[in-house]
Length: 386
Image (cartoon, rainbow, N blue to C red):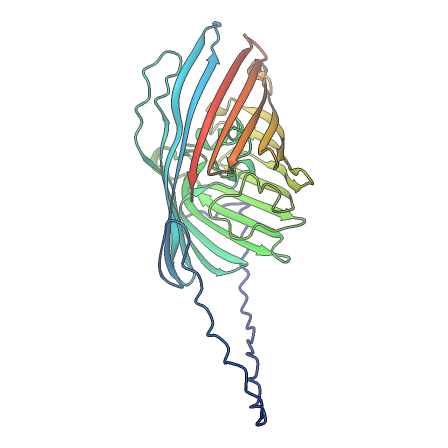
């Protein structure tokens, strides 16, 4: 097997022993004529696990969850007609847990875009498929091993949880390269290392993945390495994805960069994510710059293109509303410059029960370099428990 060039391999093995000292029991008091106080009550047992969880022992447990996102969508097509759909964006069953002292897993199935019909085609009857199936062995904070079907660390946006996304969905280009490289929903099978350093503020992820298999499957694997630095609060051991918003409960300013390569395909990315608490709630901001170069290996990417996405949202905790806007731009290099496009979208979310139940409304416009501008309106409900 060829060793992936440029693959970031950090193998820091540390063994720290922290002695634990219990407080010495107080010596017996001298005999007194006054009554001694009653003996202290025995320590209370820890509360039972909350939620849909099975706890076998301190090191064996399983947690279950569900996600349902019904959606109404009205999209103009290139001829000026309107495509009208009632469909389900995501239907998911989720299970995660721990099977041994340092062994964890995350498993998720999905029926995606159920009932949707595109450009007059028959509606999608779909079917459940596995979207996540990752196991993690936590050797130490600096060195953790992931194997299975893994969320690819191409950008912060690509690693955000769909159930906690502040916008109505991830940006248009978050999974563009992975789709072209035969992945599914931003995931692919492979092996990855993850670890933390500098007081848990620096996180790395680096791995080798199936990617696009050439004839005979003898080509090199897809290689992705990503670094992220959190300036304030940390995001330790998120499995498998980051939160889209913390609703003012954390101070997050995270800067990230990734290198993505297979054969002559290259996809470097830089990103900045901010989720900052305020007196009224929080400010949420995400910025992504990506350069995709399909080379001769991935003709579906149409050569070179630069992608820039920026979005910002405000959460008002008293009224539980979250207005937001997003700008997306993709510029292709010659001779494919006619494929360049811009997208504008804005909306407002209502969070009566946070991420467990919310309603999102988004209105957007696509402006291609060549061709007709089109509009889209989306209304989405979310039911989530995990």
